[in-house]
Image: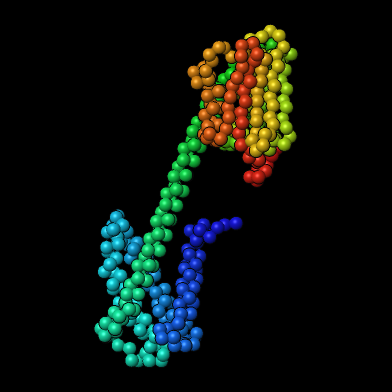
Length: 371
């Protein structure tokens, strides 16, 4: 449900209605006061008196706001802005005294006796003028506070929009970097089969076509449901199995509960590619790659494991990680900040395990369709 602050910020007429209701509450509040001396006055009379004083200021509120906006255009400092309001406040207060006097006489049926005399202003100096002057500065103070709040709100919105645009630009650059990297590696693998095993090369080209169609369908998406990411991986594994044949075995174990969880687009492809390149390609015997996904509390845990030679001693992802690893780390950082985990482990001869943990954000909760 939309809160009152957002509604007031967006709708001008709602702001004026809200202000009128606040002013009406003030009128009703002061209509209940007891005059000095304890003299009993009918509530209707007290309401007329209160309304004649306070509703006069409703007529001057737009003028006060307009004056302040004009001053703000030419005076930057708040002190200078307030100093210029001093003569304006005295003039407006004097004018409200005369208008209040005229309204009071009108309600009493004596408007014909009203005179623009200095005596009216001098008589108000005993108390009415000072109270009206405080009303002026009260209105101005509330408006300046509201204006400052709206200015801060606008700056925060603009800052957030700029930050989001910057992150989206960086993510787009990273994704653009990843696609040619994948395409180059796939075409390089196909080229090795063109002369010797053209049937295999043809089948790999068909698999590559399916992969490109999937990648183009998500070219603008930074996140997709895990089910669609797994579909892409299945196509990619099919391409690699056409290349390696029985030497490559890939198993996928995904908890059905997390199939609609959003993950970065093409998150798993570079990890599976590394597992096949470094864990399967150097070996002559059959190799196994395992892809798994499960829910742990309110987080999604993904892992890719291979049975290859493992990591060399002293391996450092900052210095030794390729484009796929560096790209994945940066995208996770941009999308989730510190609210994620990305770890690579593996000793010599024991294979490599890559683990990723991100918050569970279900696509269904955002109104997206899971394919």
